[in-house]
Image 1 (cartoon, rainbow, N blue to C red):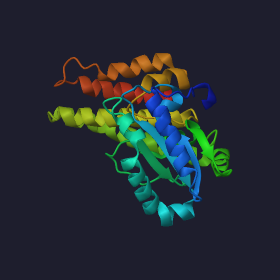
Image 2 (image 1 turned 120 degrees about the vertical axis):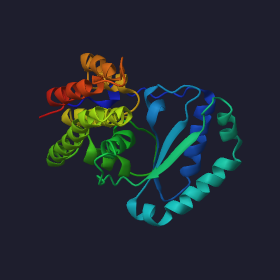
Image 3 (image 1 turned 180 degrees about the vertical axis):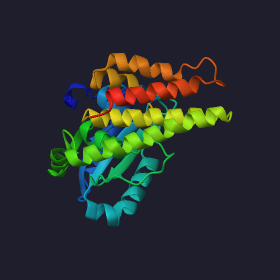
Image 4 (image 1 turned 30 degrees about the horizontal axis):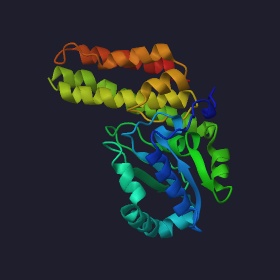
Length: 267
C-alpha cells in the first residue's frame, strides 16, 4: 500500500538566497495568463537541500499552450534570470547554487526505450511533479485535477504492464553479465549491473504502487523511509562493495539481484 507523500514532505530552503529567488520566480510567473501553477520540486520540498544545492522549480502550463508558447516562455525566463540580481546572489551562495527551472504540461506518457538505456523516467516525472512537489502559487484547479488523476497511483492495468516490462529489461541486463565477465569485459558487466539496479528500483516502486524520487540518489531515504524497507537497503549497498573487480564477483551479484527482483518487486 502506498504511503501518503505528506509524511515525507518537509519543505525548507537551505538559505535565505534560495527562498528569495523562489519568491521572485513565483511573482514573475504569476503575472503570466498562460501559467497555471508554480511548484517547488526536488530536495527543497523534503528539507534535504544544502547551500550548494540548486533551486528546483517547475512551471505548469496547459498542453495546448505548451505546444505553441513553450519557446517564448523559456526565452522570457532566460532573459529574466540573466538580469535579476537575486539570482546572481544565489549563485554566490554555494558551488552549484543556481535555479533549475522547467516547464511541464501535465501530460505524462511512457516513452519507448532500448535494452541498454536503463530505467525510463515515466514514474519519476509523475512523482517529482505531483507526488513530491509543493505548490507555491496556483491560478486554477489544473494542478489539483492532475493530482486527482495520477495519485495515489496510476491505472492498475498500466501498472501491471509496466512492471512486467521493467522485469524483462532488468533480467536482460543481468543475463548479459556472465557473458561479459567470461570475455573479460568487466567494465561492461558492471555497467549492466548498474543499469539493472536502477531497473530493480523502478520495479520495486511499481510493485509497491509508490512513486520514486530518483534511481541514482536519495536511495536510502526512499527505500528506508518511503517504502519502509531498511533491511533491503542494506542489501542494495553490498552490490557496490566489490573486492575483486576482474573476477566472477559481478556474476554472483547479478544472481543476487535477480533473487531480490523476484522477492521484492514481483506481484
